Image (cartoon, rainbow, N blue to C red; front, side):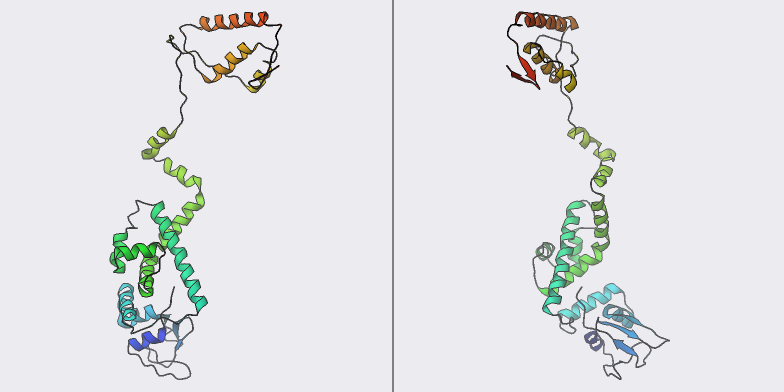
Length: 279
């Protein structure tokens, strides 16, 4: 996050800006023990005070207002150039912008992953950030706009979505188990029924009853070597097609006839392996 220059906030609040041995006058205990550090935070070294915090906390405590009110006041002051952000180097700006873009990628993922989550409604966020629908869409998609508007919108997004995004990361870490849990819901049971592939029965013309299919494994197919190809074709075909017959005797008679054909064609031998013919 970009940090507000602490000294500019002190000046905006009308605090004493005179220094003594590097310390300012504390606005709470009025001792010359208030030190501002490079991370734009301050600490009072008076043992009876020990105030510590950033510019937002300073505005909250000094004016005795909420963090939301203090944030709005700082936003207005920034817009009107009454206060300023801490100066950044090019590399610091690059790192901060990269962090913002990473966070926005998670925001887009959150929006797609939990489409029915009421905590993420762009209308609500637009109202909080006091910006337009188009500007909000551009920023969420990672398109740079006015730098001040960018930071203001990012601050609103972080305050509303940082914790929910942590939940998103945990759900994603579960992988397929997360979605299996979703499908345990009774409402999603119909989806499984629609998705499921069911075995279909094909009907043979002129028959009315089902004939159970012959389930043949690889080991059984090995025994079909040197058998007449017509028998083999019949058995392999029956693995995938459910015939329907009035009686089982019809099928048995068919097998007997094919066996007779085997004897008649014994002079011409065929070899079958895995469903292909070879001489």
